[in-house]
Image (tube, rainbow, N blue to C red; front, top):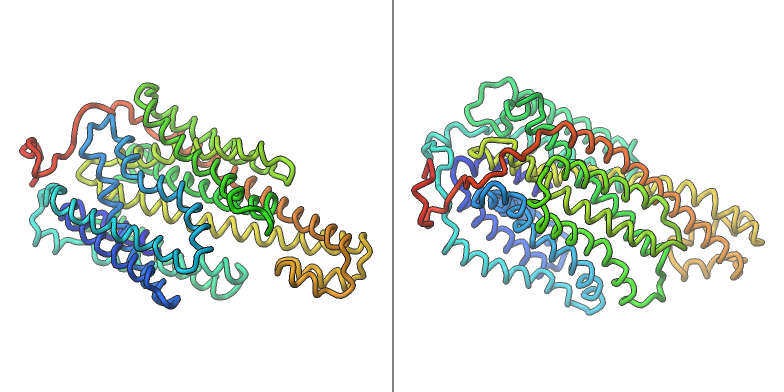
Length: 488
C-alpha cells in the first residue's frame, strides 16, 4: 500500500525537484524500517517498519526506474534490469535464507539488519556520486511548489488506502462482508473522482496528465500501462500456485528442508534466466514489439499449463514453471521499458510512478483474486471429497465431519478424532490433496484470461524500435557532459 502511494505521490515531484533528495530520503526511510523490524518486539513495530520501508522503497525505486535515462535509449531495457538486480537477489536467496532463519531462534532479525547495513553504504555512495539535475523540467523551486497537484494527492491517497484495505479484507473475511463492500465501493469511488479531477480540472502540474493516456488513442502509453499491470498479476498466480503445490502436493512434515529448497529453484532461477537472456539477446533480436508479444504469449501459455499440476507430475511442472518465469522476466522488463518510452523524458518520473503503481496495484489485486479463488474452490471441494472418501474407507458420518475439520490443523488434531484408522486417514488425506489440485487448477486457468487481455494490449501498443537509438536523455551534474542537460 505504502509503496504504491509513494510512487504516485512523488513520481511527478521528482520531475520537478530532481531525483537526488528523493532517493536519499527514501534510502533513510528504508534504513529506519529495517531497524524497526529487526529490533521489533511487537506486531505494531513490524507494521511501523513496513510502512517506512514501503514509503522509502517507492522513493528509491522511482530513482531506480529513472536510471535508464542515464544510458543510451537503445539500452533502456538493460537500465531496467540493472535497477532490478536487488530483486534478483531477493527472489533467489529470500526463500532459502528465510526458511533457514526461522529455524534458528533470533537469526531472522539479520534478514533486516543486513540490508540496513547495505543502506548505510548506499547512502554514502548516493551523497558522494549521485547528482542529477535539480530542475528536470526547468521550473523554479517556489513556482513548482505552488503548482503541485495537492488535491490529486489527497484523493489518490484516500482512495488507494480504502481499496488496498478492502482487498486485504477479502483474505480475512468473505468477499460479501459489509466491510469489504464498503471499503471497495468508497475506495473506487474516490479513485474515479481522482481520475475525473485529473482530467477536467485545469492543473498546471497534474500527477497523471491526461494527454499521455490519450496519445495515439492509447497506443503510446495506455496499452503498455495495462500490460504492465497484468504482467505482474501473472507473477502472483505462479507465486501462489507453485509454492502451494510444493507444500501440499510434493512435500510433508518429514521432507528434508534441503529438498524443499531445491524444488523452489526453478521458479526463482527461471525469472533470472529470462532477464539475462533479454540482457544478452534483446538488442540483437530487435523487433521490440514482437519480443513483447512473444514473451507475454509464452508466459501465458506455460502459466496456463500449470493447471495440469498433480502429485505425480512434479518434474513436468518444474519445467513449465521455469519457462513461464523466464518469459515473465523478459516481459516484465519490457513492460516497464515500453511504459517509460511512452512519455516525453521530462515526464519520466510520472511514467515511473505509473509503472510502479501498475506493478504494486496489479500484484495486490491479483493476490486477492487468486487467494479468494483458492480458498473458496479448495474449501468447497474438500467439504465434498473428504467426507465421501472417509466414509468409503469405513468412517461414520460424524467421524468424517470431525476429520474434515481436523485435517487442516495437522497430525495432532487428526489423532484426536474418535474412531479414526490409518485407512481412513490415508483416504481422507488423498481427497484433501485432490481439493488443492482443483483449487490450483482454477487459479492457473483464471490467469489465462488476464494473459489474453495482456497479449491484446501488447499487440495494440506502438513499437518502441524507432526510439531505441544512441541518444542519452540526462547526464549527472558531476559528469563531464553535464552541460548537455537542457535544465539544471
